[in-house]
Length: 124
Image (cartoon, rainbow, N blue to C red; front, side):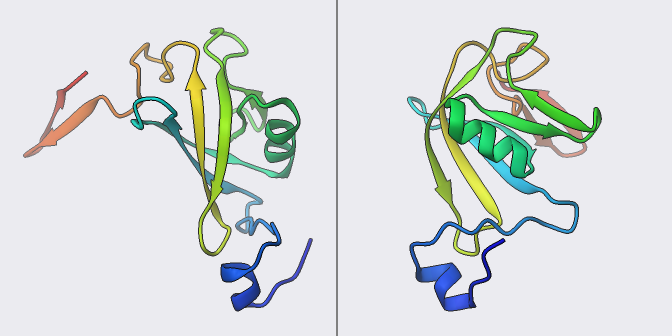
């Protein structure tokens, strides 16, 4: 793992992802065309490496405790267009072209409900 001081991490050109104590980064996935937030997931070092290698979004499944390729069962892959890195390199925005709905419920985005008072209203 590359060690950088705060200035190098925040202003420099070296990619040195800062994984949390569980070995994960937060990944926010957006649609490259609509700019809509599609989902939030987690990446470990293996998922990040596989994503960069294949151009398809891979994540760490906390519930299954393993690497998973988004779309491996549904066919709804996320083709990565770019990876944006936040200032302290502990979160990513994955700009992707979805091949079908991103949410396991079949919704285009996992963010298909709006909080209205104490209830959730479907918006998509």
